Image (cartoon, rainbow, N blue to C red; front, side, top):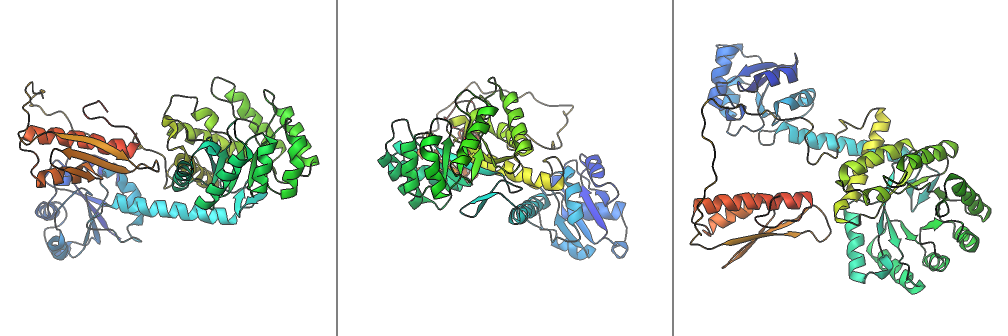
Length: 497
């Protein structure tokens, strides 16, 4: 297939670097590639490629993904398809290999189509690998350990103390974020009836595997009677009293070292659990927080997995993310990568504090990335899925400073719009997803929308503003509100974002 790439003067070199010798380039008479028109494209082709239409022998033309306009007449005149390429020239190297096998679009940029295709291919591959994976144990047909994907276990903190509506909402939000399992945290003051109630509510809310999180044998016993799927946790303080009952129910139990002790204590407790008849063991060598021996604990994980590859490993990522003032995305991804190296089977997070909101979906995505990376024997990059949310993998083409320009200045005058003020706020999604609505309140009406564009368009349509500076201000604030929703942040009008 013979391909022609149309671009502007500013992006010409970037295009040539991206495509190598896999396509030819035609440069339209415009600095900015997005301003290419059908007329400019045809003029450039006749000047640089061929004078007569009959000499034109290309099968496909990619125009920049940000170009608008109807190129159907140009297609008819040239006798070839004209499709939107990627928005940014550097993505051409990813698009071109699909040119012969994929139908691109006149409306959707190729990078967006290809992102969806690559993402779908990645998810399909993950499902294929998971179906073929072998594992030492299962929870309600969910594979744990072996070469299966690391599973995310999300703790509902103080599940035994939450009212029914709050507990149901928490569980449903975790499930929507992609958790694989639900852990019901029991408070220090919980009684058996609290455990029974929490499990009953949870069972009505989700079909996901479920664990009880307590060392209290009395509470564990009640959870066993209620049909809990897994127990967290066993140590020297409760093994003698409750381990045989767990064995009788034939469910997995997470074994931990005694308080303040390490590897030897873990191995001793595992042996005690085995002697009590527990066959489905999961070991938690305990991941220590940064500043409290994290490096030593990672070594402990590595040592345990090397000596006991058949035992699934519990990996408490929340111990780290909750105790560091850093955005959770990178921390979760890095710890998940380390977890893959040290044999982690279960990724545990409470997603409790504001700074760790989103950890469930981050860990789920990271676990998928690590599975693909392992299968490809590569680093977790260029997989079709990623966790890049703020920074850029590739920088877009920047403008250059013009030789003549005016310095922008903030106006010192502000005149109140005769149409009245508009108050802007956000209504976050109740499930904690990165979704929600923007609320714009005028004296006469309230407007709710998902994006700054649709809210602003509605404000203009309803003629709620009369001054251009007021409209510009509202556009600025509405976009801040939209970004706050997308990033899971709070928003206050006029505050710095």
